[in-house]
Image (tube, rainbow, N blue to C red; front, side, top):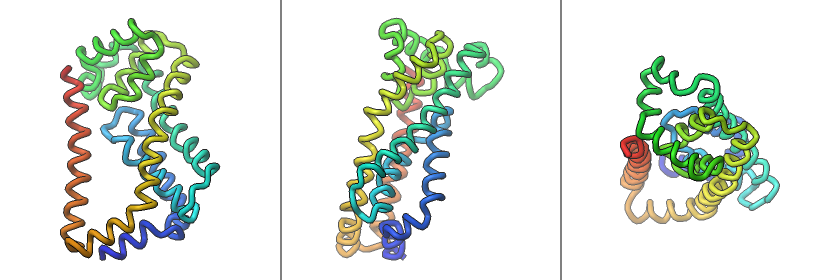
Length: 219
């Protein structure tokens, strides 16, 4: 089973055949993350870099990465713009209508992000994009504090230009060297043990991300 999973995931033909499903999944997760759901962007962005390399036949084709960059940035920006629109149209009073918003957009986060806007202006959007725990609040407060949409999109896009290529590169490196490493490791420690370790690493990563979000909400 282990070898079957590895052969499918790392197979360029399999990635190409399932291009639509993979890409749609990546786009949906990124959009929902922009809406404030506790879904880390890192995993779908790395997956985008991984499958782009595979769909190109295990080669780096620059224009494919250009298309991938556009594919992932568009849903990110759209999700962020929804948060901006929410703040712009309804303001902070909307927290009183929905319990989940009272938890996400709490007073401590609002005060923290407000100080960023007072200090850095629209560039606070760039700062918020780099910090997973306060992204939604930053974009929401950008609307509340009347940051214009062109200025908001500009700083958000600049933030994507900085962070997105990093995760695409990590995904590409995993696509290039991951198969050989996994097969060597499986022969050394065994398939079942390796699957358990990889699963534990993924769970630890997700728990760490969720904990970071929670800690940011309390600072």
